[in-house]
Structures are given as structure tokens and as C-alpha cells.
Image (cartoon, rainbow, N blue to C red; front, side, top):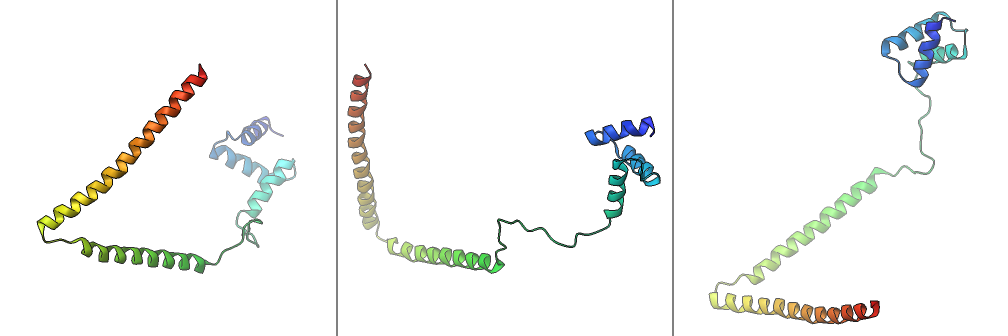
Length: 140
């Protein structure tokens, strides 16, 4: 076999050949198919180039799910979002107040609720400070 062809073979199997060099290798093995194992490999590539496989691959661990499950899931999500959206719109009308004094009362009440929640958080933070002090004493 030609020394140039052997070098091209080494480059081909290393993945370093250009398209022109691959064409040269393929044409050489097309003309001399029985010289080496590589010749039969290239001949097989040329013969099977236009063929389509007669079976399709399916992953052994996966089952094909029917597409209607996806459609049912989308409909369920849209239905849930629609109910939530229309339910929230109806609640907004209950808080509509035309009287400014009534609006002030509602605002004060809601701010007091927030303030009470923040005050509860302060008491928890003092408890955490006590725990941290004890932890520092134990470390020493």
C-alpha cells in the first residue's frame, strides 16, 4: 500500500483529515476495495450512504406517551388560571371605597395588621439573640 495512503489513514482515524483528504481515501478504497479492513469499511460507508434504516430506535426505558395527555394538562392549567383570574377580579370590587374617610380607616387597619406582624418578628429576634449568646458561651 502507498505510504501516503497509510499517513492519510492515520490522520483519518485521529480525526485530523480535511474533506479533500477523506475524498482521496474513499476514492482509493473504491478502486482497491480488498486491500485492508479499512477498504471494506469505506466500501460499506459508500454502499450504505443512501440507505434508510428499516426500523426506528426506541429507548428501552421510555414509553411513548400519547399526545392527548399534554393537551389535557394544558386545558387543566388554562382552566385553573381562568378561575383564579376571574375570582380575583370579583374580589377587587369589594374593596372599592368612594368615601375618603372610610378609605383612611381601612388603610389604618391594614397598616396596624402589618405593624403587629413586624412586632411579633421583633420578639422572635430577641429570642434568637439569647440563643446566640448561649452559643458563644458554650464555644468559649
